[in-house]
Length: 170
Image 1 (cartoon, rainbow, N blue to C red):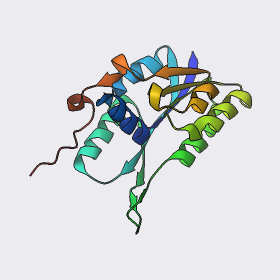
Image 2 (image 1 turned 135 degrees about the horizontal axis):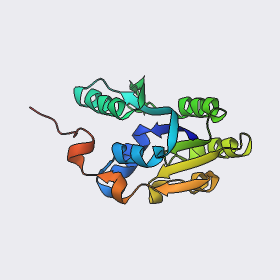
Image 3 (image 1 turned 90 degrees about the vertical axis):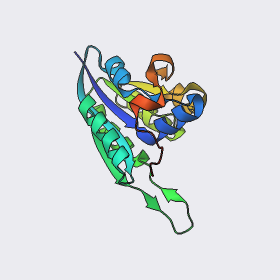
């Protein structure tokens, strides 16, 4: 059976899917598609933890699907900007698992991952599948992947059911 490791850049997917479609990424359908006839060696979602209840609820949904949720605290800088990406963590984990699997699945449109995809393919000889929103995924990442799978159609879900809404309650 084909061994797979899945790495999801949760923030990138949330914002690109919302911007392109006004919807959410359907993690359950993605899981079904990415894992069919495959042994899952690792499946990680990387997120920023702002500590709110809706976010925790979403993280628990991800865990129930089969993902390990890796959290990093949200950091607000003095100048008002924010820090909180997982690029280095995702890269280190993907390199670590590249020797243990046949396929690395990366869910992100971030062009910073093009070198990672290229390295896993060339140095480790492994297949790299990249899932991303077509018009918001870096061309360099698409080109570095063994296969680019567009996030569209059945991988999309309306706001109400896939992820907690961002609506504030009084």
